[in-house]
Length: 328
Image 1 (cartoon, rainbow, N blue to C red):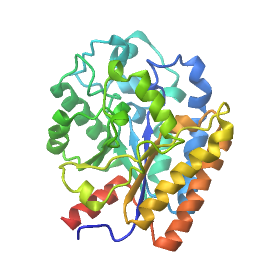
Image 2: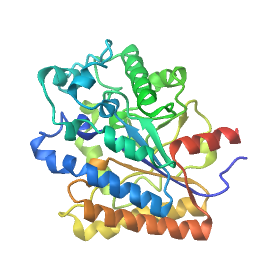
Image 3: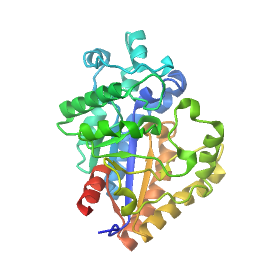
Image 4: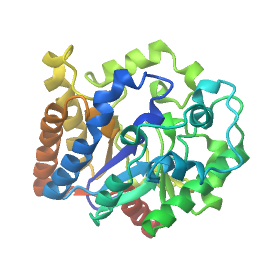
């Protein structure tokens, strides 16, 4: 088999709470988004069940713990030594005797996700690890992923098959760690230079501005992928197609343009029997749960039409990985 038998719609979610935002926003400034995550997760699960959407939840390992004491009892000894200390969550942990559990831990939400058989529990690393930042090294990454696998297995009973690199900082030199630890696939980036994996210093304003424009106007292409595109690497690279940005009041008149950009790429994937891979963070929806869910349901209604007309199907990353391996 050298092509998919039908188009594929994949969703991966970066579930990280405040661990992914610490160096970007003050907790108080982002509190509404974080406190909205409980509602977001429950509404997403309801929508996924309604539309039969199979999703990969890439979860930061810290979220599995009940509280700070539980977390501190399970930290790896080999920790990243980022040159930029603001990136280091272990310093943040040492500096805070207590954390707001609602913004840092989510064991009950993870338990709820696990009640849905089509939802995959994957890893977003143990500590929201940055693979391209100065100071950290490969063996520290190994320790981080090994700890993520252990806590996921302990809390869910399941092995980890898929990984999403925090801030999309995938590092080709670190892929051997995934192979060694039994991780079958990861989410890579679209091919356009504006989506190149870079560290924080390399995340230039020009590229960010063009990525924003690309959400509305077709600059980088459809970013859909054939079976042949996905068969060449080990572990498998299952690249993203589109980041689902939260709705914007400032750009509200252009939301229909942004929606159509997504729907056209989905249609292209369905017609050409290719993959369309959508991703976002649950906290992106937290500031306006209702508005973002309305937008998402329009995407799901379109998927429903594509499923009926072209037999497009929904697969999570683990399911897609198994399909690709069976075709080799």
